[in-house]
Length: 119
Length: 389
Image (cartoon, chains in turn brown, orange):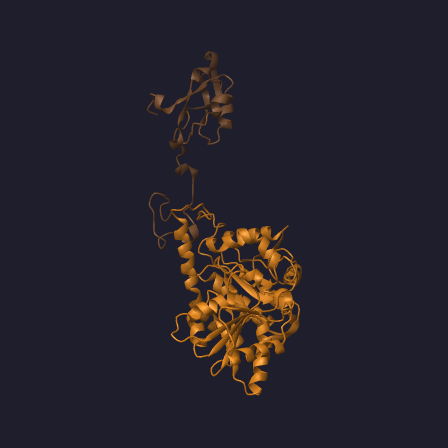
């Protein structure tokens, strides 16, 4: 609350915006990734870029791009057009929906503490 | 130039709304408030005002739509009574916390059960603790002028709180009297247009309204709300002086009627104060020194000023048109509160009258005055006027 929207700085009643109004909120500034206990591990070699995970992700945490050149995926094929990238771990809550929906089992959920990647 | 028009109290309020020309009105019909919206809808249909009316399916929706419009930046109004106020309660309670300057006329009616359509103050007295400014009106003329005052009060940058403007159901609401409607141009200059410092439709300057506030912030927000309430009395006086220039009348927190040398006085709200003033005149003519105090601004309650006005009256009777079951009646409790600071307090007596529209007559009020003058009062006892034993 107050000037910078950070809930951690507790201001007195005289310094708060009137009526619990707040500076504009944006989910971009709210890193839900910190909630994560499970992490999706995506294997690009098994991915068909079908976009199921992208569509199901409740946090739009799977970025996509257009690739004319294409990327290598399932069965060694080159997938052109809209392709997914690695999950955005600032926002991925680790809900595991992507792993459940993935038709080629290209996503596996592992415990966060078992991860070796440094993001 | 002002014009005199034969208007009911509800019509008088609709006239005020015509001059205020709100951007949005969302209301649902509830006896005896219905004529306000009916008359106002005619102004909308005839193109007399620029208002967008929102037909809604309930009072809860009416106040919700009003809140949405006010948050968007509109001058938004609603109107209700009794069961309607009860149904919209959830949203009504949210308005002061959201700091939205909504003005809502209330045409006082008894609360069910038993179901009843006539006047008492149990509807608005239930809403005294949630942060709405409350102004009571004796007649259509006062209701009209209080509406004009209310819109300025609500929208004042130091306040930004909602206002309820009360009038008595049927007694005032449906009775036609001569009402002086002041010059459109002058009134419109007085009420102006709403100039919000921020509003949701200002997409260049986005902000968040109505967030969750848990134990770490809720208390602080509510303390802000109290601070706004503390500014009301000063702004009420200043704005009243400005309105006086148009109307030639004064806008005190309460009306004192023949109180200065009174041996006994009564405190009474709204239309019954008119009846009581007639009684005061009659008894004065008979040589009995009696007086009256009629509260107008009820929230915030002007404790200090009331104390000053009543301190030299030996005995005061407070007549409430509602009960606070298991507690002192609402107006009585405030008067008792106001007088606590005095070293030598007037003797006090609480009376309840007129529930569910039961008539009160001059003879009833004369009996009250005679009882007060006799000194046979008990400040801890609630007495009833016009109740069959």
